[in-house]
Each structure stands twice: as C-alpha cells, then as structure tokens.
Image (cartoon, rainbow, N blue to C red; front, side, top):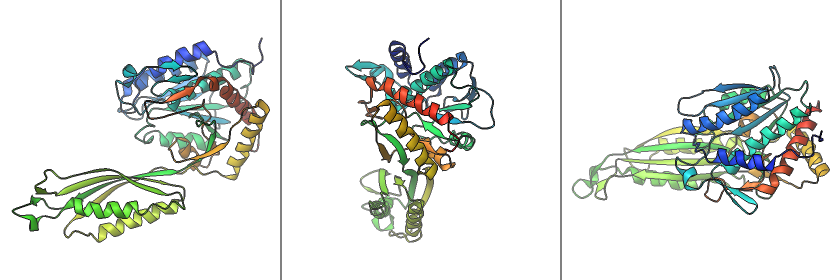
Length: 385
C-alpha cells in the first residue's frame, strides 16, 4: 500500500472531473447548474461515508452543502469553497474546459471549482489512510458567493466557524503562489436621487436636475478615497435621465467601498448623511440603501500561529509561497469575523478570475494538494491554534 503522501491527485481523473464541473454553467442566480455541481460533490462525499446535508437557503440559488465526517459539537477544521461562478448562462458552451500547455482554462476553473475538487481528493486520501480517525472535519460549499456576496449562506458560514478550531479556504493561490492572510471588507451602496422632471426648453426653471445633484455626490465620494489607509471608494454604475431635452427627475448610482479599518465605513456613511441633509440642488432628495456586504478578514495572533504552521509545512515539502493581502472578497471574511483563525488561497495556483482568461496551473495541483494535506494533518495534531 502506498504511503499517504506519495500521490494524492489522480491527474487523469482530476482533469476529467474538473472538465465536467467547468462545463456546467453555475451562475449564482441560476440554481439548476449550481445544483448539478452540488450533486457531484454530494455523491462523492457520500461515497466516502460522509454525511451531506443540502441546504436550500433561497429558491434563487443552488443548494449549499454542509458536509461532515461524523456528528460533532465542535470541528477540528472547517474547509470553505463555493460552487457558483460569476459567468452567465451560455458561457460554458461558448468557451468550455480546455487545456493549453500547462494551463487548464474555462469558467470557474480556478474560482473555485479546482480548489473544491482538490479539497475532495485530499480528504479522500487522508481518510483512506486512516488519518482522520477521531477527528471532526466540516466542509461547507455554498452557491451564492459571486455577485450576491454570500448573502444567504454567510450566517451558516459564521455558525460553523464559531464551532471550528480554524478555517482553510479553498480559493485559488495567487498567480505567484502566495496564500492570503488578510482581505479588505466590502460595502455596497445604491443611491437614488429624486428631483423634478421638466421640459428643458419650455419649463427649465421648474425642473430639479437629479443628475446635477448626483454629480456632486460622485465627486465627494470619489474624493473620500484614502490610499494611506488603503480605503477605496468607486462609483461604478451611474444611470439617469430619459431624454436630452428633459430635465432629469431621477438618477441612480452604485458605489463600491473597500476597507481594512471599520472606522472608514463610519466616515464614509457620515459623509453620505451630510450630503443627504444638505443637497446642492434645491428640492432634491437622495435615498441611500446598502451597507457592509463582507467584513474585513483581519489576522489575529491565532492567525499568525496558523501561518507559522503552514510555513513550516511548506518548508518541509519544498513548496515556495509568500503571503498576500487582497482587496477581493471571500467567504473567509465571514469566518474570520466570527473570531476563528482563517487562511485563504489554499487551492491550486491560477489567475484571471472573472475574465475569459481564467486559468489553472496544472502542475500546481499536486504540490498544492500535498501542502493542503500536510497542513490539515498538522492542524489535527495541534492543540494551541
């Protein structure tokens, strides 16, 4: 019988299964495709004898899966990944799974179907070699990550994190191989400006230009960016008016804020309240909707200990990586906000997420699986993380 740490990934089978998963459109808002991806993982884990609980958290998304190797009040480890992609229906048919030299390509190949699949292979290997005996593992796979910020699954995520010693997220390793120890929080705001429409030539003076009012907001919000604190404010969507010869009575904007310091959100929301109470254009009003969609993922002392454990395993295996702070969102943010040490980027290496250039480095799959397996084994033997 081969040793547990010889070969974890059956390369041919892995690529066949990854192609199957990538060739399923699983947009967050398309529950049928995400349901097919969930069904694959449910079948695979049930074949291992694990308990799989499908959670239909909303009719508009596919099922989320809570997967455990046995009932437990506390988990030694929680693994997170998502089954959905950012791409709309028809993308998989347009550009299905393909291989170009060392790169596998296709929608969701690295974000995050490759990582979810690697996690399955690693846990299968550890179980086959009796390395999970008397240990309690939970895997949570959600279907509402992309576009809707895990709005249905985040509560389950945090409840599971609170019951867990530590969390590893199976999102991809960065293009340079780095792991992610820190992430910015995300806040989203939707502004609706109400003015008064009027004929631009005949009745101009009775109009109240909603676009003009919104323009003052755009300038003020963009200027609220503070790069010294790595806080960014981006007015990313703007809509207003009905015709060139009409004073616009309504205008809308969507605003994205990324931050590390929670006080920055207080500052920006106070700015919006000030603008709301003192309009530049008489008789206009602004409705503000939204707020924080993902808290920041900030490292604690326990996180630093987990980082040291991972570094030690990487050195032992001869796998080079560094640490990255990311402005992108992750389900690890919810786990970290629950107070549990969390490390992200434990999947294979790749890049180009959310674009037609998305790729997975095929030769990274096996070594990253070895790293994940070694880290899990080390975590399960620790008492002080």
